Image 1 (cartoon, rainbow, N blue to C red):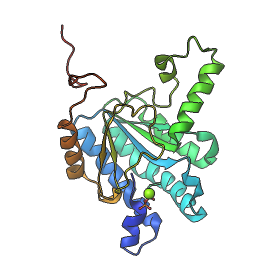
Image 2 (cartoon, protein in one colour):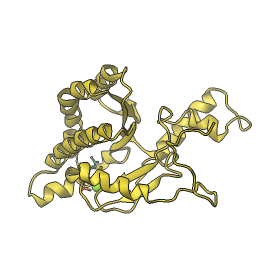
Image 3 (cartoon, rainbow, N blue to C red):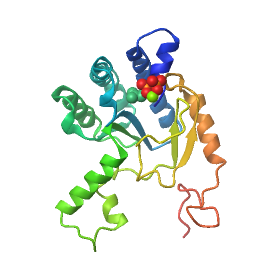
Image 4 (cartoon, rainbow, N blue to C red):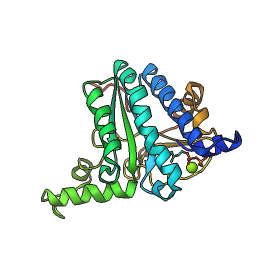
Length: 230
Ligand code: IPE
Ligand code: MG
């Protein structure tokens, strides 16, 4: 969800205003996904590296979590959204942690769309935390397979993403889903995140639909959602 700061700069407003509008774009996008039958949406809200930002912006983002949860979670819960937070929770404040706990608890029984919010998340952090937990569980060089490690990854509750969208014009992954995006279709758009809407989502989905996915094979794979042949 990149481009909040530039969006605000262009309007001569503080960066935090861009992040506030970014929350609106997120809620809009979650609804658009629900309407389209998309079952998993994972968003990069705060990276392990974002702590480097000025203190004012970091604290603005943390306050925004509290506001966003109290303003939007009850409604999203009614709409069938389940919220899961992925990332290192040990470093965030007690208040933010309590807010995330509340969002998860309030949406626990929902199944229509799983919204995974990556917060204090990094792709490398994820791989390392998975390895550590696997080793602590007694996995060894013989048993530590790709499938076994996958179960320890922070997004083990979700299938690997089919489509990976980055807004804001940069052409890089910036330590998001390194493990899970191995075969994701990448889609980059200059649209700044606060401007993202259903039409932007449809453009990304149309581009995705035109891709041929081979997963290393020579022939196109059947779509992931296609029913199994009897
Ligand atoms: C949002 O966009 C990403 C977050 C860390 C919340 P940015 O804050 O990176 O916006 P730009 O890239 O400066 O425009
Ligand atoms: Mg940015």
